[in-house]
Image 1 (cartoon, one colour):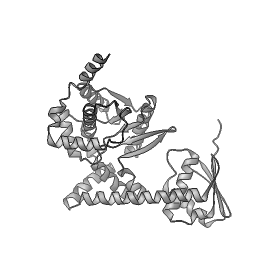
Image 2 (cartoon, one colour):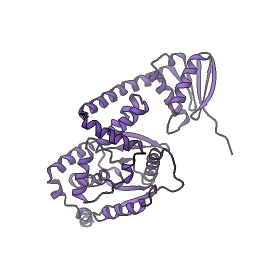
Image 3 (cartoon, one colour):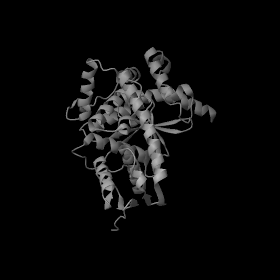
Image 4 (tube, one colour):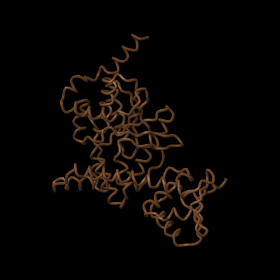
Length: 357
């Protein structure tokens, strides 16, 4: 059995010349950065890698293979690509990526987005669907860790996108962490971005060296998508002398502020929200004598917890509700799967009853 296992391991990696590729000084430095960002992973854990076929995700495939080879870990990587069917040749591209990985002895599974596609808010809804399909597949295989190919350029684009939306400290900094926790159908998943401090050009270099191939997404050139317009804006700001080291420092400072705010929110809930049952909380008046951001987050967390929905209600609705709760003696509204009722100085937040069909 031992000989058979050893021989299988050699077959898995025989089509990657790790020694030759890692002799490239730039690629070796990129790999070391990648390795550091995986320091919290359990070596025996099953890992999924989200693959698009772009240079970032193909670089992820190669670097993960390097990690397994060099560290001699017991990790079992699985590779998944979401075929969203949003372009006529999306399936053909998916097959091309599957074949290129197969030539390197890496098995890629294509997950297809079936059903009607949205006509508006396309990129945001496609992102949500991508995660939904990934979580669903990982749940079947008992995988709780997912690696994505997000890189430094993605972080800056997300920052400017959220800045334009008027996001607060949480929105402007929540993406700045290498690891994030997601809940899907009461199961927790860790999403890790091990390429986060690498640039797009770094990953193109890796992909070209390891695969001599990557898919170019034509939607990356379409100005009708906000992210594309932001990408061009950032390019112009670079020419005007935008210092990305200082921008990174700003984002990190916002992230530190966000940690303090979250602790204040936690204290506010523990001190001023009384647990009545799994589906009901009683909030006293002290809950609302806090900075606006703390009240907003505190109430959002309670609504999300009671409703057991993945996302809290929209910001505008929450702001309007908080204003009314402060001003009015009596109010009763439904919001985000909950019923919120104020009588004098007390507010009860309870789960909305679902209608039986």
